[in-house]
Length: 138
Image (cartoon, rainbow, N blue to C red):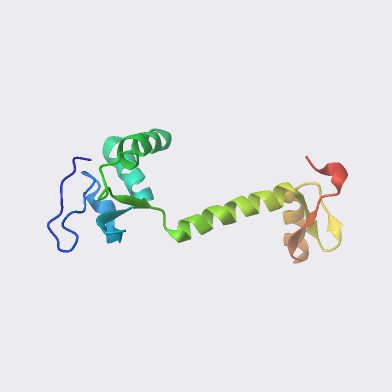
C-alpha cells in the first residue's frame, strides 16, 4: 500500500491499496475518516492470479502486508461479503450434521452414506440423517 490518495470528493482522503483496483467496491466513512472498501476475497484472488501465489501464500502475504498495514484513519477496509459468510457457516453446519448423524432411508439406518444413497435411488425414498446413538459418537 503506497498511500496514494483518491481525488473524489468527499472521499479525497481515502487511501488506496495499490494493485487491487479490481477489488475496490466503493467508499465509506469510519467515524469522520473517508475509507476505500475492498472485497477481501477478490484481493486474495488477485494475488493468486497476478502473482502466481498459492491460496495459503496469498492469504499470509495479504494479511501481513496489506490488511495488516495501518496507515492512519484513512486505511482501507477489507470486507467479506455476508453471502460468503453464510455459505461458510452452511458448510460447517452440513459437516457437523453429517459427522454427528447417520444416513437413514425410511426407517432403516445405514452405516454409510453411499449405501443409503443407493437405496434411496432404488426405492425413490428420501435420504435423511438421524442422530447417532451416543455409543457411536466419535
